Image (cartoon, rainbow, N blue to C red; front, side):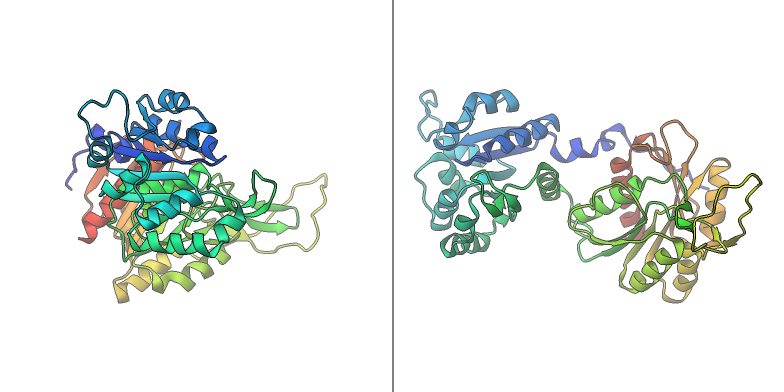
Length: 416
């Protein structure tokens, strides 16, 4: 059995590795949503991106340039002709060094300028000189956003290759209700990370299960387990960032649905089985990360069982083994690439090998459920990867997001 080398430490920090030292030009225009952009700049800087803020004159009326200089740790540019620019041609030098150009919030005025090639301020001039990917985050009154002129301008800049992130709906600063709110940071973060993530899962449909299942035995009670779903959700979100179509089948969790994935909510093991089998044929890769209950009560009582003085016995019957069933089907079709998870409390490697063979898997991820910082409910995990050739790869303690990226790297390497 070959033991593969562990990853070097530089591979462990995924958010950092995607954004560290990336030169992000952050254009800010005159909208009340400028206050949200301040938080975005702070978060990008925390992730060690090199953020340079460019503000229109109108933007400085809402929040001062000093605020953004403090948050970014860098000089803020507000005009075409900076008094201390010397021989530097600001709009050329900034555009030349840019890895990503973000405009947030983008007002109707700025969108119109971008659509028609105006270069009458530093931000619009940068848009013409820039050759990096451009992300536009509109924010304005809903009537302005829905106006045919604004929609025509948005359609035009899409033709230029700009990515438009549609605004949210809700109560606006002016008191109106409708579309036009600048999206929240969690969505913006995913869009920005996707801009830097390798798109090596494009053309792939990924089926993922996550979370626990709940097996009811009366209207008030059920049998379940301690799974939080964090590992499965991290796999789903990272696959989406890397360009995959993601179908996520999840038991009950408190985690927000990852942006851009197709979500199917289930409760019981039988419901999860049906959902997996219904979507199995669409998948190129199937990752079964859910902690599916092995047993369910034979009877589900219609009325709540009353507390008594004696013992209560429950007859349990086996649930279908979803992973084993997929392994059987794989013997005929050879697809999808099949990944299982094994949550173990002892004999981790031997149990992983046994399940790998018994269930006809391409890869199994084995983790310790009784470790202090691993397993159910934690934000970190320490897993072992075993492939069809019984090659073992031991990973160090990582965040579940970091684990997810390395698991996808491993899957793609095995597929290729």
